[in-house]
Image 1 (cartoon, rainbow, N blue to C red):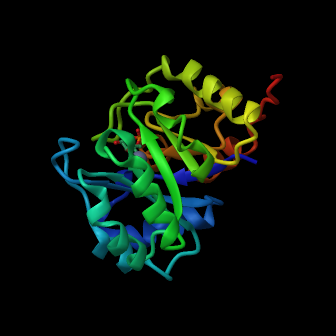
Image 2: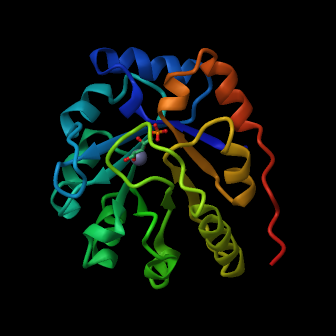
Image 3: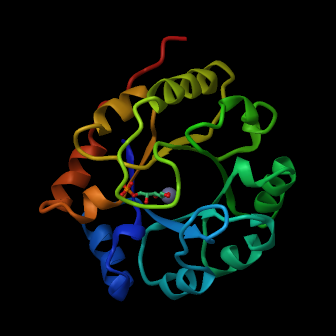
Length: 222
Ligand code: DX5
Ligand code: ZN
């Protein structure tokens, strides 16, 4: 089944815990926590203290998406706060291999995110050590943007490479996912869908989560 990761960027910040619990009760799997620093992306959200406040109070997998410069300086804090997956952007890490090793050494799952314009080739020598590859389907920084269709072939390419090389990472797609485009994204090879504004703005969020979870996944013929 497809895993659903609601992005709390689209939640009511005045009651984050209730919002997270609501998503848990609707059948969500992960909690996607968008950390922005005002440098790598032109927006600021929350830091480890907010992750810590939610830790242990909701039964979702804590998926922390670090849209920050120098992520290596904050890995330990986020892990201590409750992050179970730490995803860094390849664009922020000249020493990407080292950063992935640091995350794994703490006993945390490691992910790498790629902006829409960043090629898959930057993963070539690190893919085997990854738990997650996050394909951005908008330019990071804000919720509520439109899905960029040009990433569909990128997801397909990644899924084929993963199969061809027998790799184990999950493919996560983040940005502009809604009920109109999710089927294509899953058919292209996504394992985990992040959804923010479409889900939190939905009149029937439970049904939306259940529908997305059941989307058929394509078997790759490679
Ligand atoms: C964008 C974030 C995404 C995004 C998801 O920078 O990483 O998680 O906010 O929200 P929607 O689904 O509204 O694009
Ligand atoms: Zn995100």
